[in-house]
Each structure stands twice: as C-alpha cells, then as structure tokens.
Image (cartoon, rainbow, N blue to C red; front, side):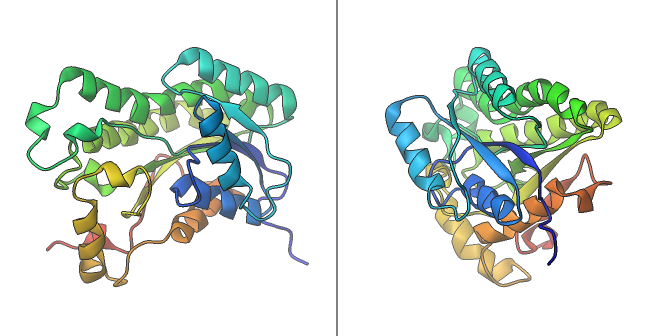
Length: 264
C-alpha cells in the first residue's frame, strides 16, 4: 500500500468559513492525503460554530482543534501559535486563506473613491497577516527541519478586474510579501508560495461586484472551458505542501483553468 503523500505532516489552516471556501477544499485535500490540520476561526461563538460545522464535513478530520483568532490583532496571532505549539510537536505547514476589503468599495467605478482606512485595512488583513504568520511559524518549522507556507491570491493582483479594486492591490502586496518571505526563510528550508485560484463562488467572493461576470466569462475564455473547482486548488495545495515540491519556493502557481494565459 502506498504511503499517503502527507503522512506525518501537521499544520494550521486559516480561513475556513464554510464548506465552500478555498480553505475548506485545501484542508479536505490535505487530510485526504494523510495530514492533520488545526483550524482558526474568527472570535465569537457563532463563528466557531460555523467553522466547526464546516470542518466536521471533512472526511477523516478526526477530533477538531479550533483556535479563535482575529488576524488583524498581534495578540490573537500570538495566542494561536502559542496554543498550537504547546499541543503539537511539529508545524509542517501554514495555510493562509484569509482576505478582507470593505465591500462598499468593491464595485466598478469605486476604486478612485477608496478611503485611506479601507485601503490600509485591506492590505493589513489580506497581505500583512502573511508576514505576521510567517514570523510566528518560523521557529517551530526550523525546529523540525523546515516547512511550507501557502497563501491564496488571484489574477486581479496583476491585471485590472472590474470591481476587484483595492482587493487587487492587497493581493499584489500579498504576492510580493510571499517572495520576500521566501527569500529570507529559504535558508531554513521553509518554502513560501501562493496559489492564484480562479473565481469561486464563496462567501468572500460574493462581496466583489463583478464576480458574476467572472464566473460567466471563464468557461468561454479558459482553455479548459470551465470554471475552477475547489478540488483543483486543493490538489495543488497538497503538492506544494508535500516533499514533491521541495525545490519550489517564491512562486505564484496559477490554478485558474488557464485564464491567465489568454490574451483576449
């Protein structure tokens, strides 16, 4: 019998809001390939119940470990990583699948009106948090020979996507943050990458004014002639977390059915 690809690997998953989120699909795939996952949820009983209900739908998840965390607060991040390292012997991966921008500014024609507070908040929660998590993950990962840090991006970081607006700016910052983290942490065998997933109908994407048009146009433009599915991104995440990707770091991997390669 073949040993599961991620047998013995354990890590933290940030961003499971429900069973449609990319974080949920990634966690499902990681667990299916032998990994153990602990999960973050936003503070509050309602948020914990929602995340717990979603995680309970993951086959093989076992006894769930959930930690409350508002990633915009350093003390919450400290608490999560402290609690995790006390309970688990190793930290092999961190999945960063969180982002936020005030939906008031995520519609076509609104970008030039974006106020300073909304702009900085989007970058803080969507991009700076990757650096903040990497800072806290570095020591436990170094203690066991390295690890993999993986974040979710989108093509709107590179090209104009109507309605994506300040979230595109935040995703660009996320991708650049990933590369600088990879540059510093590579000496410790800690790999840092992003997956640029195609549009997926999720709670988060519903805030983007142009999401409907994205979902309609992708099957027409994409070489694979379909929208991306959560399982597509989950499979890519398994590869990037696994030892098969031991030489891959500082990369943005497109999992968008080929849309990024299409010129018109």
